[in-house]
Image (cartoon, rainbow, N blue to C red; front, top):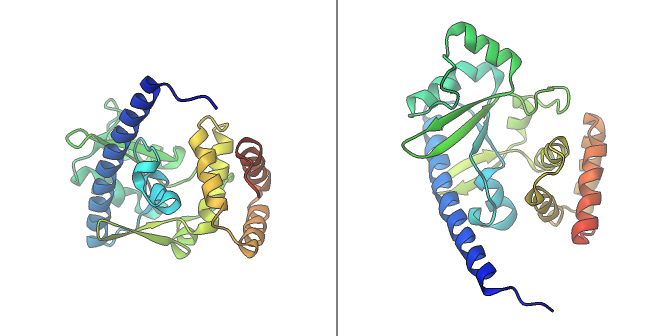
Length: 231
């Protein structure tokens, strides 16, 4: 076997430590936003991010994430937008002004809007659809909210997608973006270890019902070929 060069090990340790610190920071802000959303009865779901690291690996620092992704009901677009503004967030695109007309256009034509809290160095993508083509992943917020699961972080119960919905979303998201990041396949490989035979049957039935089974099969084939993962 070939030993890893010392300079490469040093670099890996530096990157690992930097990511762990970044994920702790994001997790703290996630907990803060969840607590404040609960106080005003604003239902939000977190997509991927540090909570997925906890779910799959037991540690948010073992999975990278650039920002926080929040899913809301289309009925809560105005309230959720104002919620982020009230908590120190501004639009990432500085040349966009949230007039009533512009908000209507964004809510109708886009799937999300990006915010940034400069003081905290945290970006948030506020989603009301999973993908630009809403027919690609036809799950509405209420269906997701009903089947949500909760991750405990910093004494806060933070909701994420239910098991089947989460696995389907990971597969469709990776396929849509052409699997350009290896860690997306690592996530799916990690998740497959948590599924029983019955869960696989239910997952396949859900994928077929939504019309996304080919993207799910694609993800499973890739993890088998790359990681020799039994599926």
